[in-house]
Image (cartoon, rainbow, N blue to C red; front, side, top):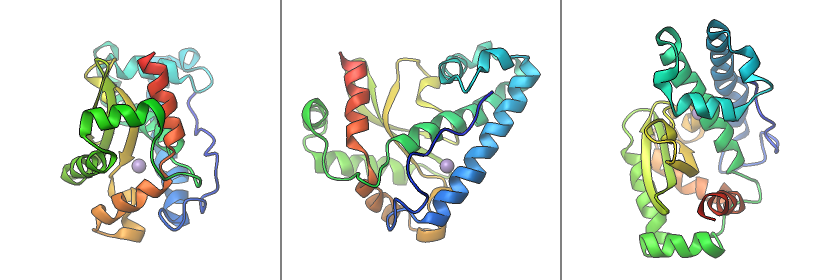
Length: 210
Ligand code: MN
């Protein structure tokens, strides 16, 4: 069955950019609830064996082919499976040692696609601010090219195309920032760059590009 992944750092490790209380509630309550509700749906499907021990490959398969999921649990898998996949990904692209600028191939691709790292950050922020209500902003790699996009709710980038893979994602649900930033989503986005684990993003690009 599905379960919370190891966070890899303490709840207060991303302070002051992301506060400990937000991290604790986000991980132990919000993410846990997506996991629990996803497991309820998996039981209804009789797919406990396929889910295995948090088999993310199986989950990605479901999310990239939602039409194959029985209708009575499709919305539950979309919302809670998407929530589990997105949050598991999100924790991994942040680190207390994060921030700075990307290197190597990723830096080259960002310059080539967006002009400069600052231009990239401005466009990413624009997408994150413009997402009305709850959702996510993404840097993706598709057809051998970088692009920025956003998804509503807990939709995953791979729902529209399994080759539409995320390299970096930002949760812009209010539950991700409201305690510290209240209505100031742009300030949360500015602070978040200080915890982005570019080494992980570079690794994802390396896996997809080569
Ligand atoms: Mn969240």
